[in-house]
Image 1: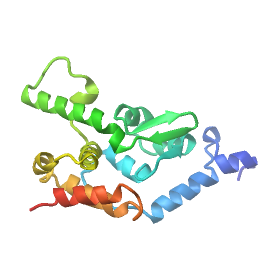
Image 2: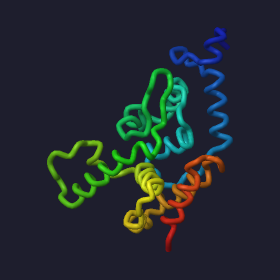
Image 3: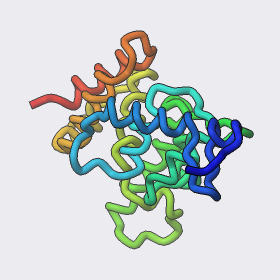
Length: 193
């Protein structure tokens, strides 16, 4: 019931509470293609697979709108976990291969903390448990490097959320996406009974 400029109709206006056409379309598409991710999936992993999976970059404005709908996820939390990086008006999605070193270090620190609870000198990002998407990305990065992942799949194969997530990521990626076979391989390795 309010007159709006063409720019406001297209881009929206947060101060006036006006959704832009792109936001309305994004919401409609998300509702129509809602993916039933595994129950128990942490909020950051859930946000990642819903909004960043299979993409190289997203417009910052679009991501900011999506983040506004998820109170437990911020751009800072995505950047802290090396999942995404803002670059001007775009947010680049960090490929799992570029996250490998960070994830290896995080795993080592988590293991050290589990071996000696209360270990001093742990930084807060590494001292947290590895979330599902971090573990899945580590498995995918190691698989792409040709490394043996059996020690990790044996440890994590009893995590039904991770096993289901691996299979669903492999299924959801476009058939020609270069990482799809890697995620299929990881899902097969995790799904051992």
